[in-house]
Length: 119
Image (cartoon, rainbow, N blue to C red):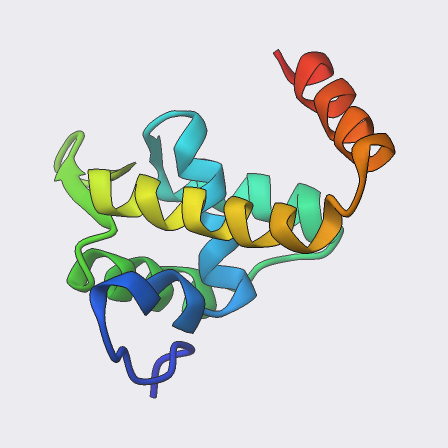
């Protein structure tokens, strides 16, 4: 069975994904990538090897959910990109996180500093 639980509605899709699947979406928010590049990004984040048997079924599920688009770069390499729904799923997660973290103006200022440093 896949890592995601049952999906009960479009708005809740991001909320039903696993952390691993959400991390894939966040990686793809930067730019389209092929599978091994995604794998390297995840390994950098986790600090450990990511098994192909974990990565590709999760990518396939994200494609089935309409959050990621899969296209052929060449005969052996697929490229994955975030769909509009995938981008909205990432934003939903960011909004939810911020709604819990930003509790006063000082915390809001800290988040603004992080955003300013990010680009």
